[in-house]
Image (cartoon, rainbow, N blue to C red; front, side, top):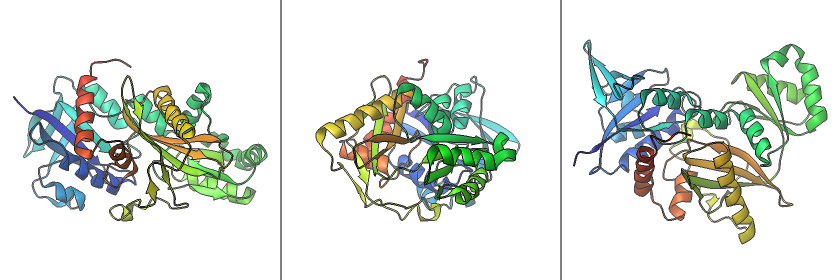
Length: 357
């Protein structure tokens, strides 16, 4: 029986480039070699696409770009090709692909862009479609959709570029509505870059400027002090939620230079919660996954206040996939280890590729 031709796309121009490399290396290590023939496509920080024929450890340590056998490559949007066009010495060769595992994070990776290109190509792929990915990346869209479904989030306000000429007035309106402190963040960002806690009106104005340097829309949210609760959701028509985990540390920001060192030893599963509270959180995670149109996998982040109020914080449709990342840890504790997880994601992508959502 012929092997399934799978492509893993990694890297990208987002700040999460290094996390993508580490996650992709783990995915590739765990793809069953007897079942899949793997093609690796890397995207440099400058956006260049390369067919990478080297060893997975070069991806893991970041040296993959220096491999002398790399060649330019393009994911063809033409469904007749259904594959990768490899360009070498003036010749173009099409490598047919049956399924793609995009391990791209942040902007131009987890925001619907690669998903839309894959939709055009006709090649099945792991994870949510372009609309769900874009809606989860753009936190203003996430808020609006969840508000409609009655899923509680922190009170929020949106600031657009049209507000820049009247930014003082807009900040005064936000301060009057939300009070202090507030979290100010880029509407579209996969990490904490550009995110600031503002305690007064001057800090708010400054925080808005910082956030605008990372995106053209800015979100201000009422600051919520609470426990950081995490749930993994997996599946298509009947998605299920993992057991509930909790990140015990506070105030730590994502640092791409530390991506291979951080182990989240302060992450505990299951979280110390009453059974009915944990069940309610899992139910809300699945409801959120369905409401946003997610498919395949997502990490759903909550804040749980001291008085028991559960607020949806964010939904990550392309979570980190290192063994010590939150999503694989949650799935492993649920009984699905990394080789089985990767295989199931690829299988489900193939099984559900012809279905309309």
